[in-house]
Image (cartoon, rainbow, N blue to C red; front, top):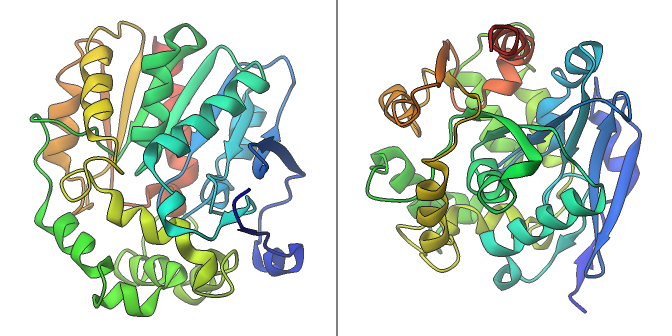
Length: 306
């Protein structure tokens, strides 16, 4: 058994606009949390977060999607949000995150899925589509990537990786809340963004100390250019190739001010799919935080036009 930390419920009292009943599933002795809102017979919206966020990132999107008749499933990856935190840094890999999500999808018998993925939600979520394509009816891809020769990692992402190595600034700060606080200081636009201080509190809440931050700490150190094995580089490349034959709807909704995964990359990726749509949003990397209702409106409009 791995050693875990379980964040006390009272630490989430600062999660405003998050009235969702918690749901949990066990995977190999680890408790994984997920939001499950909307009609039980509704088609699925599978909402996947990345680093250093959680299902909280989708709090302003879930109600509007439920109102449109969808069942929203928003998991917290192991090590994030209300899910258990494995305390051993070496435990974390993109393969393990992918296996945990597969377990959730299969255990809940999810089908007719619309995938919404951003950041690390892309490599983890698109793996599910490559492995179980019949469960998915459309893709919504937001500011993410899959590893391979078609993608050039930005200078900003390489700097980000270096900051998390031993002796780097983020290795010292260990600030999950700091990441969102800094983001909202630099991109204070959108419909209803949190204040930078509120963002710090909300995204720091799951992690009371350095030991509990093993999950967030490993994501930047799992980037495939730096850690091919931990980042599942070979599998990511295979998944991209497998999804080249995807003929169902695929909608790109992109934060155009993202320096990590920029507009050129988003449009290049969309060009691989003749049926793809591309909508730009005046947002940075965490577009769900600042532009959640706009994303929902764009997506529902694209679905109506399919």
